[in-house]
Structures are given as structure tokens and as C-alpha cells.
Image (cartoon, rainbow, N blue to C red):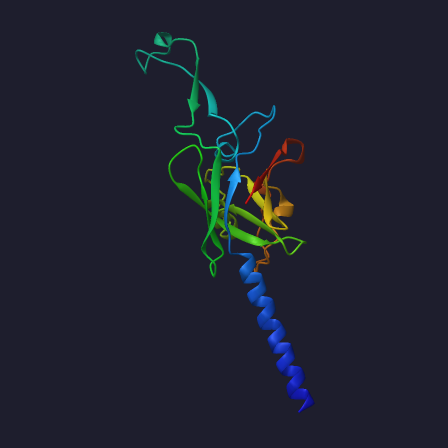
Length: 202
């Protein structure tokens, strides 16, 4: 009888633990666009930063594409967010599949993100872009374009949240995998090039 009670308590603990962690995946928050400071803004970070522009490229105009002598000097092609918002939402899309949606404050629509695991603190979750997640899990990097995308780190603080938008580094990938050949170095940012921005959510 005692053995059955201990087994029951253990089973109950495991069930509560699982449901407790699943509840941590339930999000429906609104975040304030982060202050970019003096950092140069890239396309991948712009949807989460308080800026009306997201890329600055130099282009050339040519009267004849086959004649380089017909080309004018390079001109700046500054692109703006179409309808920049001050806030953006993060919501759970599929709890069992650990999929989230994050609003793009520059363009109408959203991006899908995957939960790559809970951090050292149970209240912390780390999200990365679904496309990059798929590439990492399936080791699709040879001969394909790899866009270095930021990680979103969400921490619960009492009744509100903090959000860090950070360059994706090796420490962000804390998901357990059953393959020994996974190499994420192709997707990570060099330590000297890391950038991070913080903001609040509720």
C-alpha cells in the first residue's frame, strides 16, 4: 500500500511538473519596441526596435545593364518601415508544438518562432525564428543562404515580462537533440559582433 502511495505521489508530481512547464509556454504579451541606441540596425533586428528604417544599401542605376560605363555612382537606398508601430505582440500559436508568433512592427504580418528550451531560470524562455530552427535541426547549411537572426529571450518578472533581443550565439541553443552531428556554428554570431537590446512587455 505504501509503495502504491509513493508511486501515485511520484506520478502526480510528474504530471504537475509537465503541466507547469506547458503553462510557461502560454504567452499573450505586448512588448514596447526596444531602444536601438547608437547601434547600426539590420533588417533582422528592425521588427523589434524603435526605428522607422530598417536597411541602408548602396545601389547603382544603369541605363544599359550590359554596359558598365552607363552606370551612375552608387546612391543610398534607405528603406523605411511601412507602418512602424510602438509595440508588437508575442503569442503562443501551438503549445504542444512549442510554436509562437511575433508581430512584425515594420510590415503587416508576423513571424513564427520556436521554443528552443527553458533557460536556467524556469521563468525564462528562448525563442528563435522557425526558419533558422528548421535549418539547424536538419543541418541545412551547405550551399544555402544563412541569415543570422536574433534570439528573443523572455523573462517573467512578477506580473510583467522583460524581453531581450540578442544576436544568436551557441549558448542560446539549449534544446536537447538526439543527433551527434548537429553543428550550430554556421548560424551563430561571433562574440565580438554580438549586440543586445532590452525592453518591457505586459
